[in-house]
Length: 234
Image (cartoon, rainbow, N blue to C red):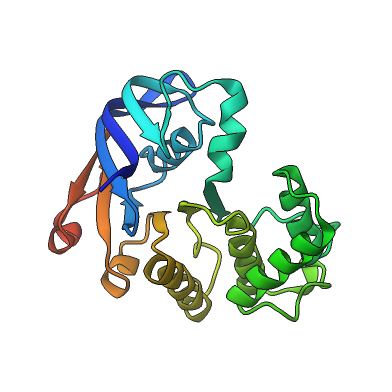
């Protein structure tokens, strides 16, 4: 099976500082993966490296066939079109409707045909059960609804990987459950690889997956039954 993400003996940077040494990680289609750790442990820096926002410190890494050691600037947008990114704080454009938020992304990634754009927006909104919210402004939506729109935005270009950085961090328990179930559905039905960054270990018991733990400048994979036995530095 071809890996969508591969890190080999990779050092992960935050600015000029190494925050994770010697990372080895392989993620394939259909994987549901957690990267957990306390704030500042390097988990978000790994995501920023995957998206080529942060340069690779050393070692080797490939994402969707692109080598991160020597990726060309002009290829970074092509890589990012193959990724769907979901943020904790949603990052919607507050002065545009839901439909306009999604149209902005499609046009920025090369879509031009009006009919195709409208059809794609309708399809992704239906997929996240927000089909009636196209003309709403973000401030008219609840936090959970805004996160569903953020997921709709992330899947517009049918990504091979969804990267979700604390996707339930600002949501109550019931709303968070709906968001997690939505991510699981994309993973199971379409085979989309999902990588979730979180500091909340309780999610793993309810929604099992592979687990990488960032701690003490290291990030390694653990069996699920070992997760609660690992003491994270305060």
